[in-house]
Length: 116
Length: 112
Image 1 (cartoon, rainbow over the protein chains, first blue to last red):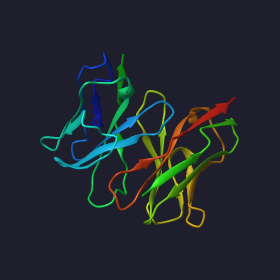
Image 2: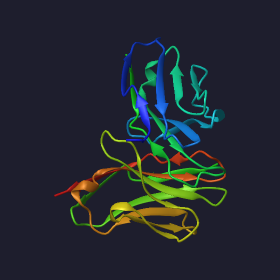
Image 3: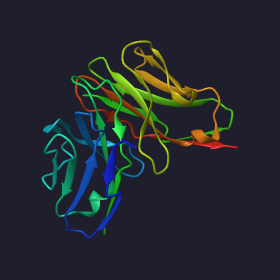
Image 4: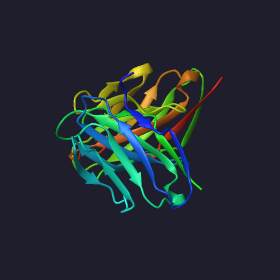
């Protein structure tokens, strides 16, 4: 299967700990997105990369959050000093193209974070 | 700024009945519109998309949606519901920006 993969699928941590999620996009896709989804809500945009460049970050992404895509392939999303409000499903998606997004986003199955 | 409003967080239909899921959008530029479906424990999958070609768009699994600029709507329909259609459905919009903005979702229940 060559879809978008995310790791880990589930993470339980204590408040104040750091966590890191990894996303491997579809190999030929130059765009990579991170979204956050809480119960009963749609995916909320966090950030996106065009190749290795992080081109936009949401105001939702506080200074405790950092994302990287060092070689334009896989990406990591790190949350420092986790808070209970960070509990959510973190979704990664990828796509190809330039200009406005007119195409399909391919989503992974998500990484569910529970902060105790 | 762009936004999407999905009317009704839950919709329940009987098997074989018409499915209608409502979506209204706001966009200052010509929008690109999408419907995604999310089955339990699975990632979001694209059902269909509108990118300024035909206003009636056909998607997978018998779903279709009609872009109505005058009503700023992009409602999703299916003539006859099947039990396997039970899922959460998300309307989404993109435009001059790269990011795609999603609605809050509508959970579809199908009764036997």
